[in-house]
Image (cartoon, rainbow, N blue to C red; front, side):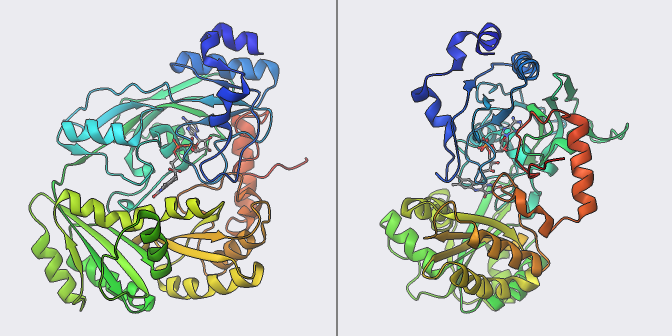
Length: 451
Ligand SMILES: Cc1cc2nc3c(=O)[nH]c(=O)nc-3n(C[C@H](O)[C@H](O)[C@H](O)COP(=O)(O)OP(=O)(O)OC[C@H]3O[C@@H](n4cnc5c(N)ncnc54)[C@H](O)[C@@H]3O)c2cc1C
């Protein structure tokens, strides 16, 4: 197996030395990971197909990996698989201004994509804190979102086409970027959000958005989270330029301030905070001011230049990093209908306390999408008690157990909370049809079953 891979990639790109493999074997949270048989680092689609063919021939499972910023354990080995790193597929084509599209290799980072888009007068339409490492292939495989999904949708909305290697080594390619092409079942659409279980994405035709160079951000203290939904309802109507509406709570702010060694951005602390960003071709500051007035908001910290906006967003973005600095957190990325958000926030603390007395719960997320990141510090990483309690609550309130991070291995056993038996059967049928030997990312999304 190793010899076949070395023949295909060159021995420098088949890593068997434990020290060289190490960085690929543990995930960002520190909660998931195991030893790989080896790390294969192909340079192009043909080499990816060769790795997949070798795995098939030898009956070896493989785990695709991009930037290894995933938070649900699906981009790292479970034990003994070939770790297929797509990082070297980092070719970025020219931006086509007429279609507002660009072709990007699976290993292109979000930051590189953003930079190329900006140079051509466009934007990627997506941004989040892992931008320097998260890859286009990983974003699409997870159907990633982030704050700007409110305005531009998740990765699915950005995909105009893709290229992938299927489990039998077939290369499927739909990179012409035609907006209208309904000739049969859309395979690219099937691969978006499949978390490496149905095919290995090698390139993506990415849909850009026109650059909205004028931006203004605001941090708004909220006395109650119950106020968030009606406030957002007014802002969405009054602010056509609204691009992001995230939230965090006061205990999370304290953690971040300590971690960053910074002063509070607000003099009078509040139970919760909204972070808004408006983006337009011309300065949206007046529109924002009028929107805040219409929503009855008198107190807001406004940042209208790039440096101050970044500083303001840091209070929200640094949550993930600040939490990780405190230990290995249980991370549940759930979604709840906005009308139930305040109820979720109250009850989630109760269910965590019941499942793991004394545990620390930090909540933040993308308010506009009803997407809450529940982080629990304290319980043993292997103890799933709090995970189950939180996921059950999200399901009970009519939400989802996976909003943007994916199901991964972390939540595979709990898919039945939000998907019917019929839906899961259909997912298994698709998996069996495209990967009959179960070689692609086994155990991710669909829990292993003994037939
Ligand atoms: C600080 C921080 C902030 C974050 N914020 C957000 C956020 O706001 N919104 C959000 O959506 N996510 C967020 N994430 C999660 C993460 O960045 C995303 O899930 C991202 O999409 C993962 O990309 P990656 O390249 O790192 O993928 P990896 O972690 O390498 O892999 C993730 C999954 O995709 C599969 N995969 C990777 N590449 C391919 C490929 N080429 N073909 C097929 N399958 C593949 C893997 O097998 C795995 O299942 C954050 C993570 C961190 C660490």
